[in-house]
Image: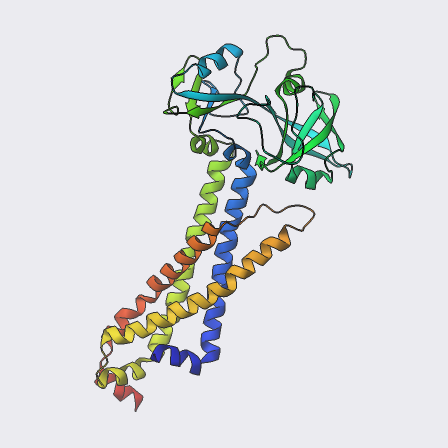
Length: 366
């Protein structure tokens, strides 16, 4: 292939272009990784609920913070047609003191053992109804607090301090940009409402069943998990910002690569004239340019993807966790998008190739 032969003979020039492709691909990958990481920090615990629908208070605006449900409302939710299983979940944010003495915040989730609201244990044991001072801590909580299973943690709320013992570790993620910890729902009621009479029994209700999202009743509404996640405070604005940065990255990457190859095409007009004079078609010449673009894009991605993965591993070792994460889908989608935008950018050269007149180009070469 003439296109690949030219890359071999003009190593420095094409190496610089490959470097630009690498840097742009790395930047877009990091933006996408930041978007995934922020989403996980905002509500991975919600996405990990063993449910396909969630019921909120009717006046809460699909907000866990403002949602409060009475026992009568919970009973009405559970009696809806199509409900196969349900679980009451309570939420409150509270400060805790880590082993380093620093005060931090965590999302305390109250649940009933034996229901679909019970998290999966990865270390230690599950809570029993007798563990009123027991706590299941997410791994991110243990890392941030410098604690382990068996340790105690002081929780401060409503001017009171309560000591919990970590009996198990879970991997449920975060909620409202805080590590999630699970306690008994009765303990959550005491933590949030104290001795208040007639207090709510749950913030939300997890549901498993058929055709539940969209149901509204007296004092409640049911939505799917996707809608619930989108309504977490700050998520919509955060996703819009990340999406905008991602789109700009793709556009700028495609334009930069297109401009590079457009300039190269202008520099090669005499050579293109020679090729067309000996019988090369416009399609053949343009195909060589596309081969070069595709080759350099693949080289840039082959460097950028491992570099982004390595950066992720390094950032995870920092004392303060950086909200960045990658999935296989992130790498595949970003790579495909960068290749497509690069090819579209290179298409700007097609018009110049078509305009090359062999006689005029040969005259310029003399």
